[in-house]
Length: 372
Length: 260
View 1 (cartoon, rainbow over the protein chains, first blue to last red):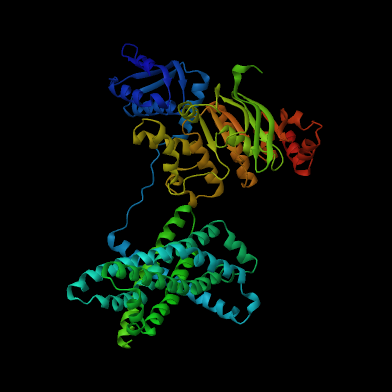
View 2 (view 1 turned 135 degrees about the vertical axis):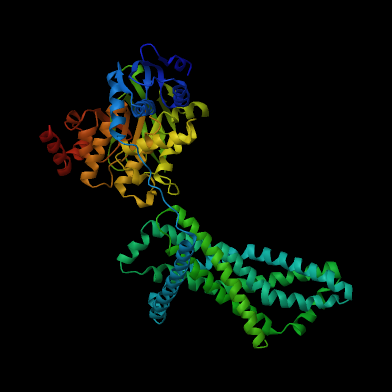
């Protein structure tokens, strides 16, 4: 960059003597230098390129811009003594930049319009979801009595992946939750000397709410996202289109096994979660409140009716349908790019958890009306 | 060929991949300012050579010299300096899907130069137009561009730093014949005006005749022959004969000869 100091404007001969490297690395220096030059008000100016060592397209662009700016000031600009290869580069740049390129601006719509647009988009998406569920349901009905068209191996794979492989993490999570809620409740109950009631509270809360809900949330994060990403990549890769053209519907081959598989696996995982939640609570009750194993297990069946367990397990298939259908739906909505896979995976998990919570609230209302 | 005008010098390259020797003592040198094409049947290791030269793949043995620097043992600084002096157009374009075309093309400028943002935009637009795209395309995202336009966009990004070497991996694959011919012209035009050295991997016999100064035919883990097209098609090796004497190879040759 040292030699760029030698690029200078000779006021006597009205010449810009360009020297040294006119390339991208020197561009900022040259730009700063050109700004300091006091160009004459009228007449003509010569750009002398004799002493340029190296010029790349950035340098050629700068010369072109300089020339353009000078012409605008009603000066006549001449170019002199450029080597043929530099001349060629200048011509190339000039040909491309015959007029000032103006980027098309994207104007933002007014907020009311964008609100309307978003609303319509949401409604459209909801409608698409309903259509998706409807189509899958008819497909399911068409194959349900035809056992030869069931994809047994994919189904088994889904149960293995979503159920069996999730066992350790679900067990650990439930165990910890059992410990935590027993601790919190135990502290309160001790004040009233009602230690033994921890069994009732723990049993009810874990079997009815915590077991199904935590398992579903965990599975939404683990499996719902995986469904979306798998189907999304297959969509981008045109594998879904390939299936369609071969007369195998993606619903039958890819989505129904996933949905039915999770429908089977999630209640089983919920049962598993219930067991570890209770065991965790039992250990905590034993160590913190000195409730013996015998007392705990003796009281448990007396205060917790079988109904509690069944209500909890009964929610799991509903949650499974929510997770699997949203996961598959979002996967099929992937379009265009890798970014879309990421966006839809996020949507899939967020929506699944949201609808799990909403469904759980609905269940609470229904059960309380039914006095269960 | 003497040492000084070879811009890339590969000696004794050996690559062991997936349980077989992809290259077994491959020698190749690229002269400054030429267009060298790499051809060969599927699985002959064309793309692997390119990946090794780009440093994306560690060769099992051998030496690769670029700009007289040994690439295999180069320090990160040397490597970065080399990387700024080459541009690559990947087979699938590898445009960043989350950025629009203008951002894609300006990316290397933001990363590797100290130029202000307005200038970067101007330079990026210049390269986009040099690649034969319009200003309207600049604000589009890669997914909104057709295959040929994506190739041009990828090329614009590859030449944005005015590289000395341009690597093209199957530049005309997946393009229709008209677009492919246009792309060949574009490459030739840029090569002559910007003084580029081009290394390209291709299957397209038409572009071999039209664009390449020399062609290296890969087979058996080696370079079987490096020569100009008219001489290469006369070579007696059965693989080379099979490659060029098929109906398509002949048609391309006829095309070329009648074109001149």
